[in-house]
Amino acid sequence: MGIGTWSWGNQLLWGYNEEMDDELQQVFNLCVSKGIRLFDTGDSYGTGRLNGQSEKLLGKFMEEYARQNGGVYPNIGTKFASYPWRLTVGRNKACDESAERLRRPVDIGQIHWSTANYFPWQERVLWESLVSLYKSGRCRAVGVSNYGPQQLRKIHAFLQDNGVPLASNQIQYSLLSRTVGEEVKEVCDELGIAMIAYSPLGLGLLSGRYQSKDDLPKGPRGFVFRERVEEVAPLLECLREVADQRGKTIAQVAINWCLCKDTIPIPGAKSLKQAEENLGAVGWRLTMSEVEVLDLAAKRVPRELVQNIFQTK
Image (cartoon, rainbow, N blue to C red):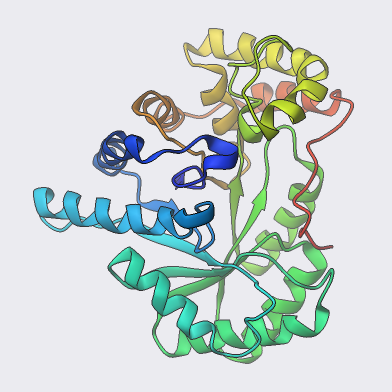
């Protein structure tokens, strides 16, 4: 399991403010001390003037933790946004800027999203950039995000022809977002690519915190949840039954389900309470029968969560 840092700097969706930074440092410290070795970020994480804030915070937190604990560093996977002006191998500049914010080299450099759905001619440039980043040593490994089975095969073949291994594909995957993920997982397994599962708690809908339309988060998530909270209720009840039998929380069971599917979930954590709960999802496994029960309950939910608009086929 890793930890996602989408919320670190995002005011619009996650209500970030800079007063949270002290607790976020404690979140980072706790996770690393408990064996978490992957943190996920992106150069576009952070809204408005806080653009890049997630990377900046990770850089600061890593330095502080290393100063107190003898140079322990986790792996950092960052994503380079596929902005339309990134049309040349000048993407190297984007990686260098991320490394500057992180205060260390990038471990896993990833294309944040494919342009195949709207600017297919830009795709080849992005792929060439990954080759350059890997061969120049700017990234120890390269990966992609939001790539469907067809596009994943294409980029894997391109990189392989250029002597570059494709390490990972990051995709929305949870009990509320299974169909595309299962198709992608088959290709990942075939080609030896790790599948990183973002939003393993369905943006928080699978956390167990939201039980009715009267108890929803503010902002865009609340709007989405209002349309889904009632139809997800039977799945949450199934999760609760498994959680009670296991002495776990609903969120821990939902994350563990992703682990049982042989993916790397990266739940977010912007408080110590959330971090501690996430950590309780590792070190054990659901039984095959428990996974099957959850699979069946998930299939009965009328609609899955909408995929990322950049998700390709």
